[in-house]
Length: 211
Image (cartoon, rainbow, N blue to C red; front, top):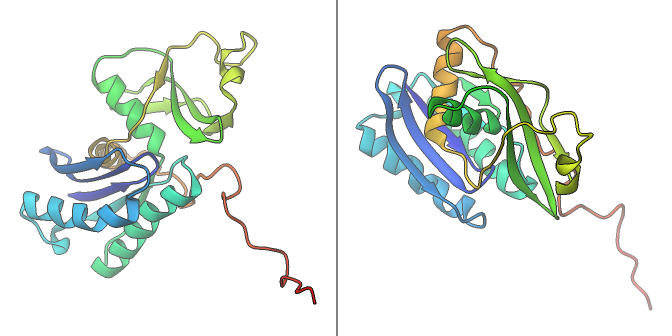
């Protein structure tokens, strides 16, 4: 049984089990309230699933891609909860959850998952198909691009069906982790996929004061 947390696009928390599926899930599309609601969502999901942290086998963290400010809230929450509960952190690429859900609902063949990166840019991940376990097979690492780049006929994955997603389901994120473990598939690296510098940076040195 896993607790899954993702804040790469909105906020989503879920408790999942390989055999019983999604036991509880909470989600909010607002991209400005991650820190405010992720804690209450965790408590609500544990309560609805009627479990304690001791019942979990791990904590899944959505690694993005996602904007710096929002993504780090979910990853930090997953890491801290896993540390406090004495459970392993299971990193999963957030786009894999979106693709998994789409294949699970009947899609076949290639797919390009797209999410909003702000600053008039998008994150994308290309998938060739779902494997025998139902897990999406990514064609490469997620990327960052201007929307026009994906519309260019010369783009590597031009013509592939495209799925623009506004949210990530923590329930599907958790099921990707469960299936990956059950079928001995590798997990993602334990590193956030920001794909660009944060929106706010520290100055290079002390601010000069004029007299």
